[in-house]
Length: 89
Image (cartoon, rainbow, N blue to C red; front, top):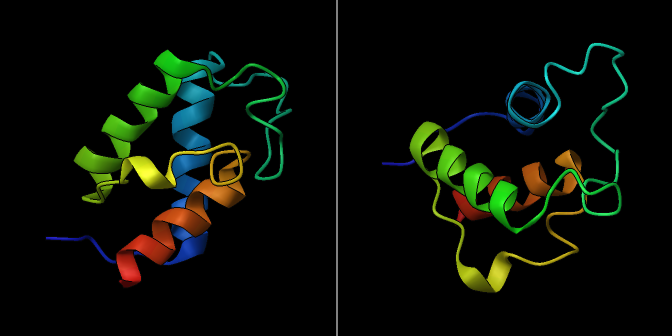
C-alpha cells in the first residue's frame, strides 16, 4: 500500500533524512531542497541505496531502476517530484 503524502511533506521528510543520515544533522543548515546532492558527493552509490530503502520502507514507494538517474536524484526537490509522480501512477 502506498502512503499518500503531499510533495511538500515528501520534501520535508527527505531533507530530514538526508540531513540526519548523511550530514550529521547538517548543523550549519546548508542543505536545502535544491542542493545538488550528486555534484557535492552527498549521494553516492551506497547512500543512494540507503535512501531508496528509506523511500521503500517509510514512504511505501518502490522506485524502479529506470527512474534512478542523475536527473531524478539531483536534489531533494527532484527526488520528491519523482516519488510524487510514482505515487500518483
